[in-house]
Length: 242
Image (tube, rainbow, N blue to C red; front, side, top):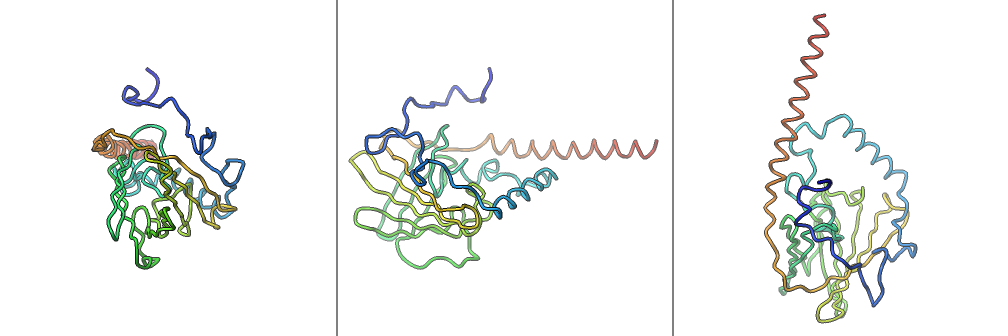
């Protein structure tokens, strides 16, 4: 069978996103063409540097250089966010818990947990948690969340340390929340851009994501690289002896 090893368990769905009664071909609403703005020369240079490091196989030197999802530290893609975007595969559910001073969002994918503070000042620039530093406020019935201070390893579409994400959660009915987000990073994107996603209420359960496959993969990937290094060293030694 061609495809993922767990295709049997994946439900790709049979609908596209609908907002305000309209089917959407793109989640991006600004720019109006539905496309992410062009990246800056600085961003392209950063991307080339990351690619050069990958080609140098530095990413296989030790576990901390492997991708976050492979290490079971963060969800795949941008499920946890911000912005909180579906991965089109599975585990796209959220549970939102609200208290007086905090809002917690439990992410089904890799059981990430976002904690949004509803008061206080932002963290110093030197403190960069996973999923950034989120501070919320109410504008009428809309929850507005500003997030900065993203961790250097949590690069949303190659963004820099200057990334700021503004989210708006508005309940549009008993079973739906309209989620809007705006991306600002002048050192990465030529212009700010925004999108929106409908969050639909479900009676289904949120399942634990144990991530056992990722843990096994991590040791196998590094073991394979050590084996490759040994073979190359033996080949070089043989050539020198000849």
